[in-house]
Structure formats: structure tokens, C-alpha cells
Image 1 (cartoon, rainbow, N blue to C red):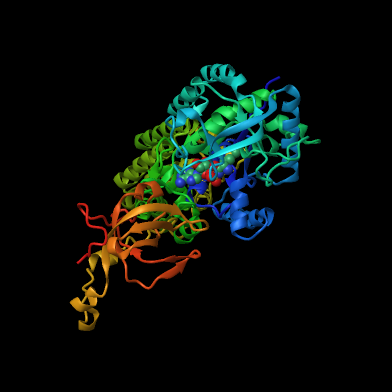
Image 2 (cartoon, rainbow, N blue to C red):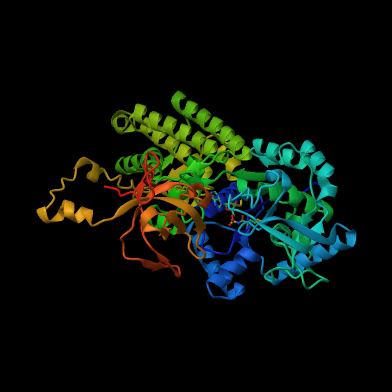
Length: 638
Ligand code: MSP
């Protein structure tokens, strides 16, 4: 029987400990682009996203907020769904790991594997990272090292010993290696497979998949003291979300599983490329066809994250620039193969040059001229050589675009569309239809119609990235994007058919690039009273000091708590809002400059007895001020 073509795409499920940020939006936009890319080819598509709601991290965050875990996680669901709606994320199902159907299906998965002998009871001891809910293995730290840092977040781990259930991961080492060998394209980009291979080749240990130390999780069937460890619970969402182990959903599961593409950030590739296939092998299920692994959005040297306090609010960007411009920026500016920086200046630049100029202006010039020449119903039978060439360039673009989309290189696929837009702009400019119309209206009409064909191709292929704006673009030229047809195949037909042109507002507005501010230097004429005297300055007592200890502060994603040796001024406790830019270990032993005569202030339940001086860097991040050579602790700064 020929299997009917379908496409099942997933995002990671996001920790329900805070509202979404730009990093989580990024994973979700990529999955949405993929889903839409298949929908415009009329391929039945299922897109799963959702939230990861169990585990110690969630329980701790709930406790800090004074809520029970379920009402704590509940509060984030609407913000997630509302943001996804604003960003046109057209998911088929939003799964929550607290859904009854998911919990029951995970329990049935555990029972099945216990019966098969792939899950057994034992004891676990090891270094554990609470925030990432993961143990680090011996090969990841130096022998004898105490509290070695977590591989993902680099925070210190703590020693844990507990009774737990194990998944027999070691039994799957050879099968996994054989699978990678047979499926060298399992991971995009390919280079990431190397990391996975070397991890598996260096030997897999059985995986602890239950906890007795926490209660907020899926109760382990047959042993109520245990709950399922978060990855055994969370990874299974990809099958429970399409009906696994749910009566009456057998057909749904058979239709969608295996996933065709699973999108994730590079931090969780190991869980998806090793544990997840092994879990599936153990339960006799097919493996996902591909993993798409993207890099991180960084701020300075650090991954953008809520816990570091350096995250960017996608809602704010939506209000300032609109969803489609942000979606475009995320997919064009950031290559999935690499980490990338987010910059508002770059975003504004891209909106101006790519969206407003290259794309929006082409549509605007064409529609305005068509209206002026009363050529609003356009169709052409005979093309000039130049237009035949443009048709050829369009076909090349479609082919290259398709190849890049299939490879997962979205920034390059977009680059192909822009190459064609440049060619179409050049053709429009060189043919000068506004002049041509005076002598040869039919030729002017040809230029306008060819431009419409290019815009129809661009509108179709950019629709996965910018659905709202591309619907608007297609509407302006009277082109119907009908997802009940293969819209991409239609673009490969010889150019025929007609367009009905409508004038309208520009598709994209150029953001103010602060030109006004740059062109008119601000002359600050300081009023006499705004100066301070040397006596005023002398009132601020600043001293050099050495940071002897440093900790994160529970409940604050901004603050670090420093213990500072200030010589004659004593040992002080000083809070500093630099958590987004430093990890505690970076600071211990460093000298800084501190204001020591600020009125002590209570912060997060403790007294802050001073202030550390910092300065802003070019990229907007913060650096502490450090004496050039060792200064005396308590030495006065003048
Ligand atoms: N709950 C787990 C995933 C379980 S999947 C079975 C998790 N959640 S998360 O909320 O921390 O992150 C989810 C996704 O968001 C990951 O793919 C992660 O890489 C992505 N991002 C979070 N911050 C990011 C950036 N700063 N940049 C790009 N993506 C990042 O992990």
C-alpha cells in the first residue's frame, strides 16, 4: 500500500515557569514555517506544540510564587496561546503534560516497558543540576571535581543519591549507532550528529527515569512513591499528542506517527537524538524522520533566557514591528546552524531594506502605476525576451528555494526569493513602464504583468514566513493562495492567467531609524545648577574591594549576591543586578569598585550594604568596573 504523504512537525514543549520569550518564539516560528510550507503544497499537516509542566523546577518556582504547582502553571497557558495567536502560529494541538490523556498514556508506556524489562528499579547517585533536571555523567567533569558545572547552564550541580527506576539505555547503544549509520540525515544540520555519535560511542549508561524526592510529576504505575523523571514524561508528548495509547485514537496515531520533523534548540539535542529514539525502539515504535536543531539567540556571550534575566519580550516586538517582520528577521537573520545575536538595529534595517524597499516598494510602484494607467486587469499571452528570462529566473528560484527548505536552511531559501526580487526590481526599473506606456501600452502591461507573476511567486513562497502580509500582497494583485491546491506546483506552470490590481497602503512601514536624532546632534547646554562641585563628588565614598563569594538569589532573575572584602570598611553583603551578564564563578576573586556610603537597603529579604559600579558596553550589555592592577581592598577611589 502506498503511504499517503503527510507532514507531522513538533516544537519542544516549553517549561511553564514563565511567559514565552524570543528564544521559545524562535523554535515555534521555525515549526510554523515548516507546517505552512507543507500546507501550501496541499500536504496534510499536523503541528504539535505545548508546555512541559512537571518536575522540580516547576514545583520550586510555584513554591516561590506561593502557589500550588497546577494553578502556577495554569497562569502561563493563556499568555502562551495569546502570543502564538499574535504571531500567527497555526498549531493543530497544544499539549500540556498535565493533560489527563497524556498522564495516562505515559503511565501505560511505563507499564509496557516495565513488562518488557526495559524499565527496572535501582539506586542512583550523582551530580545533578536542579534547574536543568539532569545528571551529569563522569566523563563530563574532571575526577575529584566537586559540584562540577552543568553542561547546559554551567551552574554548579549538587550530589544526589536516591532509589529510582532506570531505563535500560545501555541496551540500545549498538542499535542507536546502527540507526545513525543508516540515517546520516537524521539531524539537520549534519554537523550536530557528530556530537551525538561521540557521546553514544563513549558508552551509554542506563538512565534514571523516576524520582522519590518530588511529588509534582506523573505517578509511577505500581509504585506510588515515585514520579516519572521529567524527560520520560516530556519526550512522550510527541506520541501522546497524536493519540498514542488512547482508546479511539488508534487511527489518528497511525496517520501521524512517526514525526517528520522535530524542531529544537541545540541544548536539548542529546535528549532527542539519544534517549528519545531509544525510548521508541523499546516500545517498538517508528523513529522520527528528522530532527531540526537550531542555535541560540544570544545576548552578548550568553544564551537569552528568562532565568538569566536577559530575555526580550516578543509581545513588545510585536507591538513595535508586527508579527511578520519579527518572523522574517528570526528566520532570515539567524542561520539555524549558528548562534546569533538579536539586535533591534538589525531588525529595523531588515524591515527597511528587505521588506519595505525590495518587496513592499515593488508592489507599491506596480499597483500605483497600474492604477494610474488604468491597467488594473492584467493578462498577457506574448512575452518579450526579458520577461521570458524573468520567468526562467523565477523557476530557478523555486527550485533553489525548495532545495534549501528541504535542507532546513531557511535563511538561504529566503535569500533565493530576494535574489529574484532584485532581478524583478531591475527589470521594472530598466523597462521603465511609466515611460513605455506613452508609446506602447501593451509593452507596459507586459512589464506590470510579469511583475505580478514574480510577486505571486514571492507571495506564495514567503507565505510560510509572513502569512498575514503575504495574504495582503496576494489580495492586492488578485492572486488566490488556495491551500486545497499545490500552490508551489502552480508556480511552475507557464505564465498565464490574469491579475486584478488594487491600490493600497504600503505593505511595510520603515521604522524610524532614529535618523532625526542622528542628524540633529543634541546640544546639551548644562545649566549652572546641574553641575556638581568637587565637594559634592567627595560625598560619594567609593572603594576597591575583592569579591570573595557570590550566589544567585532565589526568586530574582536579575540579582547576584556578592560578599565583598572592603578592607577597613569590612566584609559587606552587596546585591548587584548583573545576573544576566555574569555567572557567580566568574566573579569570585575579582576586584571591583563599590560605593560604600549608600544608605543600606533591604533587597530580597537581605540587606545590601553598597553598590558595585558597572558600565554599559557597545552591545548594550553590562561590564563591572575593574581596577587595572591589584588595588588595596578598601582603597579609596578618587
Ligand atoms: N521543556 C524542555 C523541552 C522538552 S521537549 C520534550 C525545554 N524547555 S525550554 O522552555 O527551556 O526550551 C525550549 C526550547 O526553547 C528549546 O528548543 C530551546 O533551545 C529554545 N530556546 C530557549 N532559549 C533559547 C534561545 N535563547 N535561543 C534559541 N532558542 C532557545 O528545554
